[in-house]
Length: 370
Ligand SMILES: [Zn+2]
Image 1 (cartoon, rainbow, N blue to C red):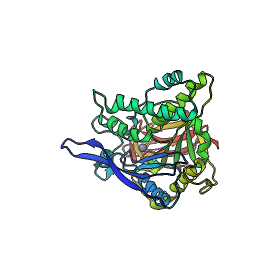
Image 2: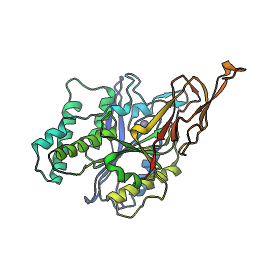
Image 3: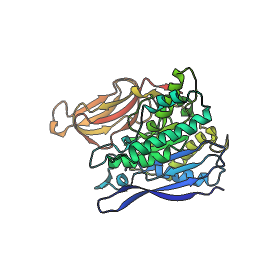
C-alpha cells in the first residue's frame, strides 16, 4: 500500500479577493524510478481526465511506486467554473480570449547556452543542473517578473513549476466530440505503442505554448545542442497530451481503460514494477501533425455528422450532410460534404449548426500503422 498525500496550491485570485486553488495529490516513490506529473481539466469542459486520475489513484495506492507521482485534477478552476446555459466554456480566458493551454513558458536560448557552458557534464549531472536552470528561468522571467503576468500565464507558470520537477509529464484533455488520441513528440515514437490509444499524432520540436511542448522542448533542444557539439545524449524528459474522448462527458468505467493504458506506460518506464501492466493488442494508427487536417464548413447550415470517428474513410465518402431550410425546394437544400482524401476522422465539432468556415472535422491523412 502507498500513501497519498493531499495538499493544494493557489493559482488565481478573483476581483473580490477570493483565491482559487487546485487540489494536489502526491505519492512518494522509493527513489528507483522516474518521477511523474499529471494534470487534467485545463480546458473547462474536458472533465474525463479527472475520472482517469481518480482511477489511477485507486490503482496506485495498492501498488509499490518507484518514482514520485504528483497529480493535479481540476487544474484550471476559472475554466472549470465558466458555465453558460447548459454548457461549460473554459477553453479560452474570457477576458483576453487566450487559449488556457497556450500560456506556458519556454526560453529557447537556454539549451544552447547550457550546452556551451557545460560540455563535459555527465548525464545525471546534466539532468540535475539543467532542471535547476529552467526552473530558475521560470521563476525569474515569469513568476517574479516585475511586469507581472496575464491570468493564464500565472496559472500556467504555477502548474509548470510543479511539472518541471518530473521526468514524465501527462496532460489530460479531450476533444469536442472525439475518439481517443495521443500527441507524442517524434523523439519518443516508441512510447506511442505503450499507451492503449488507437490514434497518435507525432509532433515536431516546436513550441506553441502548450504544456507538453513546454516540458519536452527544453530537453529536446538540449539534446540537439549537445549533438551539434558531437555528443549524443538522451532526451531526459517525456511529455504527452492524452485526448481521452469528448468534452462534457465523464465515465468512470471508460476511465479504467485509460488508467490501464497509463499504467502500461508506467510499467515500461519503471515508475511501477516492470510487466505489471502490458500494452493492449490493437491496431494503432499514426500520422505527422502536419498531416492532421481540419476540414472547414464550405457553407453555413445545420449539420448531420455522418463519418464515424476512428475508422478509415475513402476519398469521396460522406463526412457530413448539411441542411439549409432557407433553400427548401431548391437543389442545394441538402448537400453532402465528402472526404477530400483517404483519412481517419478523429474528432468533430460539438454543435449541429455551423457558420461558413467552422471547423467540422479533424482527420488524419497519410496515416500509417505502428
Ligand atoms: Zn483541451
